[in-house]
Length: 138
View 1 (tube, rainbow, N blue to C red):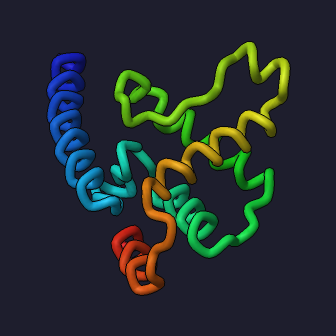
View 2 (cartoon, helix red, strand yellow):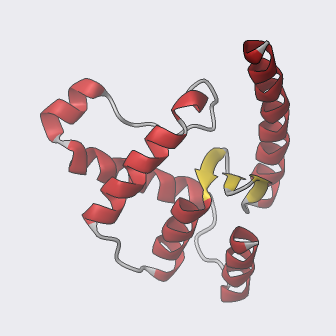
């Protein structure tokens, strides 16, 4: 019975993911799924990672390697059950982590997240950024 409930929940969330993904792709803005989960330009992302990446992309706030490493570890751990979704951002390969190191892989992962968030928009007005921050906090 527990497995059936989990499968039904997963199917329901998959529908929400796809709808949120479509709306986000069309608007270029994050769309709330549930709790602190958002879809943004084809990516599944949590609130904290979205805020840090948004501030990095549009305000050029420096982000330390330790924050990138911590964010990537939390993301990969939290969303490991969503690896089957195309919205999951993963650049980690066990072999590559061994060769180049976890910090380098975290930098690559964070760079990919920032590129996805930026999308095709080269410049975003400050009022739009402010509205996105409000959306992410609500």
